[in-house]
Image (cartoon, rainbow, N blue to C red; front, side, top):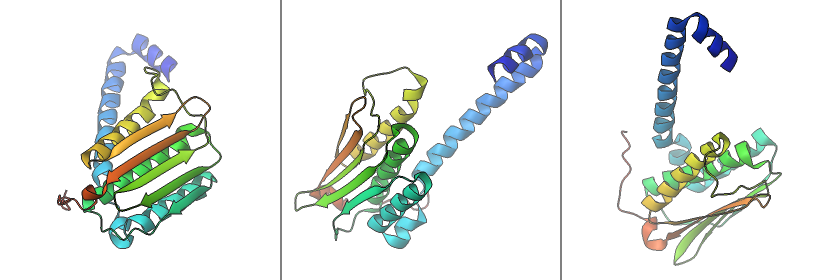
Amino acid sequence: GRRVEEKLQETQPAAWRETLKARTLLERAMKEVRRISRNLRPSELDDLGLIPAVRSLCSEFSERTGMPVELDIQQLPTQFSDELELDLYRIIQEALNNIEKHAHSTRASLRVVRNKHWLQIAIRDNGCGFDPTATGSPRSRRPGMGLMDMQERAAFNGAQWRLKTAPNEGTEIFIQIPRNQLQSSKHARKDD
């Protein structure tokens, strides 16, 4: 990649400029696709509801990666708002994504517990973990964006979001949502 670019820059500067332009456009288009897909509502959520959709997400993850996901999901009679349902689904999806791409783990677990005060979600893996204070390396940038997205989604729903990780100690993402936030009066914009 890099060598071809340098050669092109030396021998055909006009072609090199066009290549740069094309790459910028492609990166912009990919960003836009990611933004749109983040906001799209998976049909499984409407067809099945949050918990069955999450179970399906976990079994697809296990099939794809060969990594078991230990599920501990209590029956949750609460009818979530559309927005909260989508955001929780996306947080869990992003956490599994990070585990698949970065964790080098052999197992993962998802626990969803509710009492009369709050709903808690914990996603753990036994992988390599990372230093959450490290910045700048290209490899750390990707999970960083995903983590920020999860944090924003949690904050938007009045939830506490906590990350517990260290090199070689696995990772745990913990979300706690107060009960009064579970049935928010906000409505998802279905026609987005």
